[in-house]
Length: 550
Image (cartoon, rainbow, N blue to C red; front, top):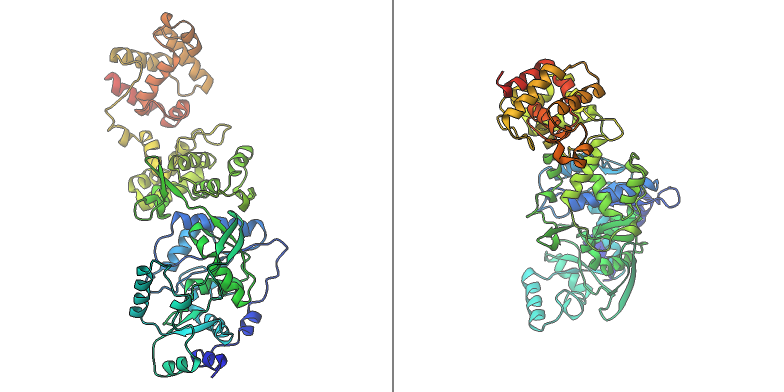
């Protein structure tokens, strides 16, 4: 018997590979268009590193008028979780990442290069495995787990490299007739790739991010088709990337060591390999030392964390682009109000070493992002968050929408908008003093510099009796607070006080702080005039009388 007969015995129903080459033709795209793919396994939550990769894939395809594919690598079906694909689709969607092709729900897909779930492409992989067997570049292996364990033990005892290669690949040289008899006798087998590499020879590869790298050639006879007929990751990704006409593979640098194997597979299959770009791992700073961000240890490793905290998806995407490209931050400074789609991501500006994930920096980015939102958007997003995670916030926002909108609109839409909110989980704390039923529970007033209660009461009484008029414009309102300051022995201007501190008890800022704390319970709030306009005369008088004992 020859290789053709062996291939026909193993895969009797497999089509010729020419069928698939015709079925999935080269794409008709503009020059320079990138075809990228995000290809997770449906085995658990989407990791921040996965989201990072997905954002880069989507951005590169979008800015080059290319195609972004969402492919599901579900050949390890023992580890697959229920609704795993839907989780991935929804997690990406939550961050504004939707594929041009690929899976759009647990069972639905779009595009002409599918199926986009590997488990549904079994016939395709078998066709290409069959072509390798015909050419003597793949073979059936009958080794049992026990035999493979013995090989490993011998290698360890001899202190040599573990694996199934060279003289250790015992079924590599098995005569075809013997292999046929074993198959006909019902012996279990898998299909292995017959590597043509040698470890003493080197290959050179240019990675888009890491630059020139040199490796020993691959010489491992890896498994390409498992006993269940499904492929291994290495084989499937080569076939899929070729037939889906992927031009650029962006993946984590844990895959760098697989380059020799992957390039050899592409060559053996007669495919042109895609360009590879290996991104640095996202790191975590722990007491001054860096480690890989961990699914097990770090809650922020799961993308669901950002929804639970209420960090807007726009902020997370912006922060990850900040990590991705060194030129993003200067671009943002120069283009404060530009849409993120205007930024051009460049792979050659990605860091070779791992970026440290900085939650403080993310929240700072988030404050800037939220500061540009309209009150309407803040209302809608925080309500959506509150409905899921905080019923008290939901009640505050819905019992009087117009009132809530006025609160959220304080210091918004002007040249220097407020930047005190970094996530929706902070909204309740930032507005609750505007609601009487919550404010009335407040008994802890921190009046800062002026602490004498008699002085505080005198300031508040004089303000209400002599200076307060809810109809005053902002300038008149502030001038009156200056007049009150002067009457009470405080400087009208901070500058005055700094020039002659012994002449005054304090300055106008200390007086306005007393009024602010009396009305809000806080020494730091957004614009006090706007707050007072929303609270209204009746509430202002009631809150001041509460302190003055009136």
